[in-house]
Length: 140
Image (cartoon, rainbow, N blue to C red; front, side):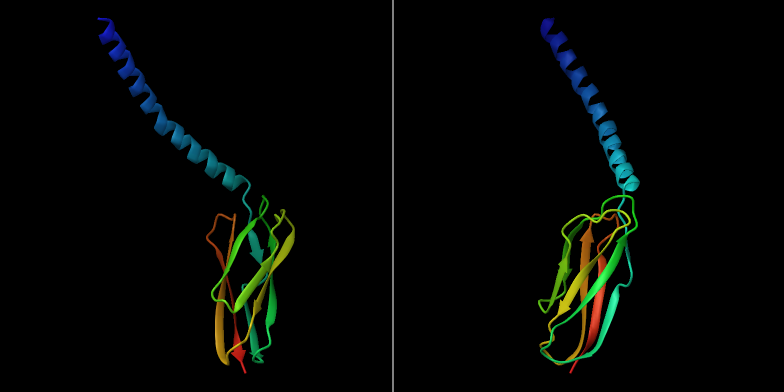
């Protein structure tokens, strides 16, 4: 009789605990989404493309893409990815507070003659997917 009572108690406890898990998981997702939306960072870019026009071969050129954090939380640039090795980037590793501005400097090393078009992907803690910046021009 004691074994049956223990087995019944064990099964009842397991069923009870399993019923709480989905509720807990749902509440966790909801609280995370609420936190994200209430303190979201938002980068507002002055421009997302730049045309260098005609540039000489073998002379690196640069442009600074400026942005302002128009959100409610600190904006953190996590990674900047360029589309090829001829393009490099430099950016602040410090959080950009709401209302503050910063920039991402993009340099292109014009090693080959002809038209070029390159992309730069900026990943941050914004809710949106990475921001795509672009540069283009013609190497003479």
